[in-house]
Structures are given as structure tokens and as C-alpha cells.
Image 1 (cartoon, rainbow, N blue to C red):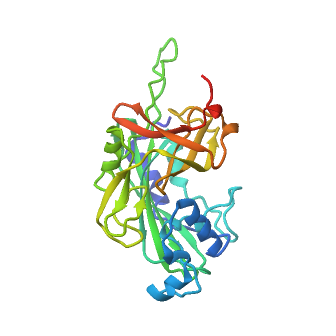
Image 2 (cartoon, rainbow, N blue to C red):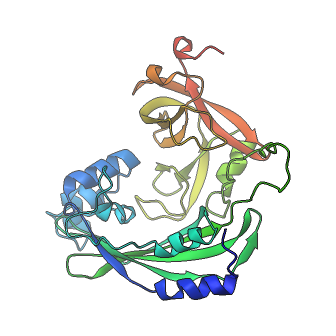
Length: 330
């Protein structure tokens, strides 16, 4: 670990700040097929995106061009499955500052926040790219996990005319990983690692409290009657802000799933089966499937919820196979 002072470190990395790195180009233009795939996976039925007749009658958009959901902002210029950026993308290293902090002994990293701003919709045929800039590094801070620096990145998402359609501010915490105590005769037992507690605010505190009370609550629009999950302040169908809740029975089927084998991240058990469940009420929920071997998981299999207190003051709706023959024996 470097003996440099915090002031020395900041002086070293200051020249690396405010360097706009890019472009990171898309592999493909915005397409109806990708929009359909996104909406299908997310259960987003907003007619603005894919219904040409709806756009012709109720919007200012062209009837013959699909409209991309704003939440797809980042995916258009993402790397492919092999980690390659789109043709013509920069090869410059955006994260020079993070690398420099690691060389100074701040090897730990934790994502802190991700704030998005949407300026306009993309339409079928648009082509996206983005630029990134490290816009701020804090003074040395002391937190519960150690000392470190908060680093804020600005990502600017542009269309083919270099017009800004969205932006994001991402903050990371680069911190010193605790060293083994000097003179220790044997490794100290690792402390228990807990799940990260969800942030509870006005929009979804009712959901987490409902779980603690033994109920899986689903939002219902008080004006059009549509159900929605995860919780959000506005109905995507009629834009009403009035809502109430219904209690789900916790029964459904596996819409899709993935099984995580590596990296093994505490406190989860591995292999870790993550499922997207079609609830009987008509909404989908992401959860874990417990008690079932990965080879026994099938799309369409029936599952039931088991409210589980995973740690103090945190109850989660985990799922298990409804068919006892597919349940893993202890």
C-alpha cells in the first residue's frame, strides 16, 4: 500500500479528471425487434412503444416507427457478449482514475448510486453512442467499510446527430481493504456478510413493510385497475398517481431463469437460481428459487412463494417448486 497522503493522491489524479472519453458506439441501430424483446422480458405493455395505431392516434411520434422505452438507454451502446465495443469505439481507458487509486492501495470498490435523466425518446432507426467523464473525486472519507474516495462518473448518451437523449451519474466508492492484523497467529474468522438492505422510500416502503407483515402486496391503479410491479409512483397505462394494493397468493410459474455459479458473492448459496416468476395475478417478480436442483428447473414449472426472514428486519419472497417431486432433498 502506498504511503502517499490523501492530498498527494488527489494531486496525482487531478490531471485525469474531466477527460471526456468516447465515443462508445452501438453495434446496431434501434430496432423494433430489440424493443419487443425488452418489453416482453420486462412485462412492459405501454402501447406507445410497439402499437403503430396507438402512436398515430395518441402521440406526436411517427406511426411506422417503434419507440424505445427510456430505460433501454444504456443497452444500445453496451459491449457485446465477448466484451467488445461497437465498431469505431474508443480504446482509451475511462477508468484511469480507478486504476490509479488501486495502485495507491484503494483496491476495494462499491457502487453507491446511479441517477438517470431522460431527455427524449429514441425511435426505430436512431443510432446511439455514449461518452463518459470522471467529473468528481471526493476528499478522503471514513466510512463503515473503511477509508476511501467517492468517484463520480458522467455518462452522456447521444444519437446519430450528437444530440443528448439521456445521461447518468454513477458514483463508486474506492476504499482500502482492511489488512490482516500485525502479529496475528492465525487468520481471524471472517465476519458475517449480510444482504444489502433495500432503500425504503415513499414509493415502495409499503412493499417491504408488507413482507414483514407476511403479505406480498401488488400495486393496483385506482383509475384503470391495472396491476404493476415493481412498485412505482405512476401508472404506465393511464398515468394516474392514485393507487392501492392487493395481496398476492404467491403462486405462479417460471417465466425465465438463470443459474449463477461464479463469482460466488456472500451471503448467497451457490449455485444460485434466479427466476422471473409470472404470478397468477398477472405481474412478474424477480426472486430466488430455493430447494430445487438447477437441472430440475423448467420454464413454465409451477412455483409457490415462501416468505423468508433472511436476516433481522428483512423478509423476502423466495420461491420453491410447487411439485414436491422436483424439490431437492436435504
